Length: 231
Ligand code: SF4
Image (cartoon, rainbow, N blue to C red; front, side, top):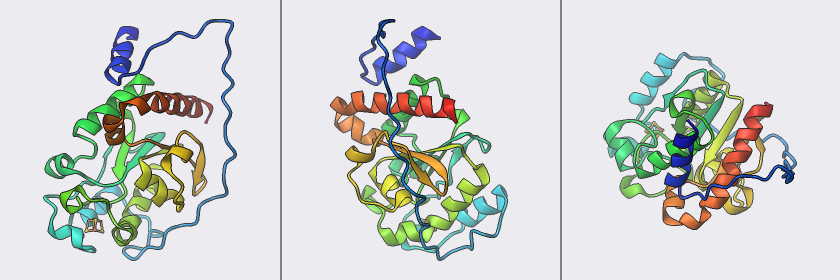
C-alpha cells in the first residue's frame, strides 16, 4: 500500500519526503469567511426536494441554455451519493462529453492520482461540474450558462450533503464562492458554501501545464486530508 501510494506521488511529480521526528509543522487554518450568498436560479425551484432519478432525468433532457445544442450528452456527475467529500469542477471537456463522466481525460487521471495520494479512492467521493454540457471548443462557461445550470448543482449538493466540498479550479471556486480573487490566493484555504466547508484547489489541467505548481497542490491535498479528519 505504501509503495503504491509513493508511486502515485511520483506520478504526480511530487517529491516524496519524510518528516523528521523532532520537526513539527504548524498548519494554520485561515479564518472562515461568512456564508456565501446563493446564486440566482432560473430553472427548477431547488427548495423542492427531488430524488436522484428525477434529477438525472431533468438534466438529461434539459434545453435551458444554448449548450444543449452542441453537446453529445449531458455529464451529470458520478460517485458515492453518500460521500463525505464532493469535488466540483467547471464543465465537461471533449473526453467527458464523449464518455458522459466528469474528469476522465488526462486531467481526470491526474485528479484521481491526487486523491489516491491522500488515501482517497475516486469511487468513494462524488464528482460533478458546475455545468452539465460541454462548452464548444472547450471555452470557459459564461456566467449566464452557470447561473442557468446552478439549480441542478444545488440539488446534487443537497442530496449528497457532503462534509467538505473541493472546488476544482478557478471557475468553480469563483462560481461557488461568488468572488473573483485569483485562485493562487484562495487555494488551500477553507471557506464556506451554505455552511459546508469548501477548499479551492488548482485544476489538474493547470497542473499539467504548470508542473512546478504541483508542490503547492500537494500542500493543499494534505490540508484537505487533515480537514476531512477533523470534520
Ligand atoms: Fe441545461 Fe445545464 Fe446543459 Fe445548459 S448546461 S442545457 S442549463 S444541463
